[in-house]
Image 1: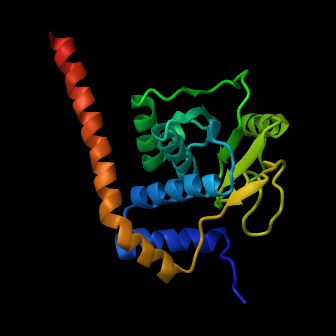
Image 2 (image 1 turned 180 degrees about the vertical axis):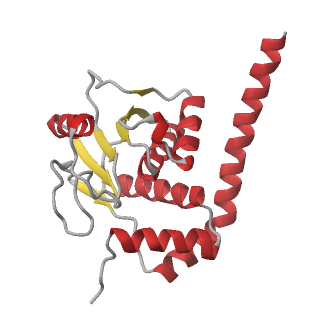
Length: 220
């Protein structure tokens, strides 16, 4: 029998991977986004026009990274930012900045457009409170859309510890739960660590180059 980890165990596993093994959080985020995009293609989920709904935490960071990867593949990806700027995690802020620098559309109002898929990256496995107010409005709106629905980690609104619906929950047809036995996960990540770090470093080179060019023209 193979047991699935709960939210607390997954958080502990991530902390172990980051702090004990030494794999940076941004690398884990990049690997998660790559696996999500790859699996959507394998399941024949149309990503021609995707709406990724992102929160302020690392689940939202995964979503921003997915939007970037889809754009790099020539797909149309928009981001509905449902979180709060003041609450952005360091990794999510970084991914959001990259997406904005690439010119990907990021907005906070509900779009009046149709999408082939909505990707839920609002809340992850750490959610333990009832969803009310703005976040409830966002999830209820997502549920009303007549399109394919995909969740990152777990549908927003479901308690990872008990399975309880915390007020409301995203009705995902497919959920990508990025969990595997810790040793296997760490082994696979180490194999691809160098390639992923170079990928992230190259993105920052492009970002810094763009910022330097903008500063140069402003001085002129």
